[in-house]
Image (cartoon, rainbow, N blue to C red):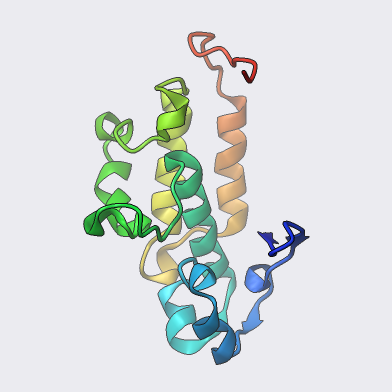
Length: 156
């Protein structure tokens, strides 16, 4: 789902397996940032390229950052490249979590989401999980018992 210039929700082509016209790939830099390498190179959308895009969504959720953001230092502009070293280390993961959370998040759930994102963002499509597997792992997070140490706060 994407938002158009009038802030209306639109379904994107990422959910459809098929061919992406070259004009579309080159004309939308924000969309290009979420495409897998095989989609960029061959213009083909596959279930595994959709998994890649979902992995980026998970990273954006964890970090509170856009995938491609020129407001950050050069080495931090590409979210996938920048975050990779932090995703597999539970102790370092907190360093890239969305600062607006102010450290209030269930670490086990964050770690599990980071692990899922890492698997979704494998360069080789065959090494990525299916969306069914991703959903199974996300359901496990939902079932985790979180301590009330991080109570949700009402918006100011």
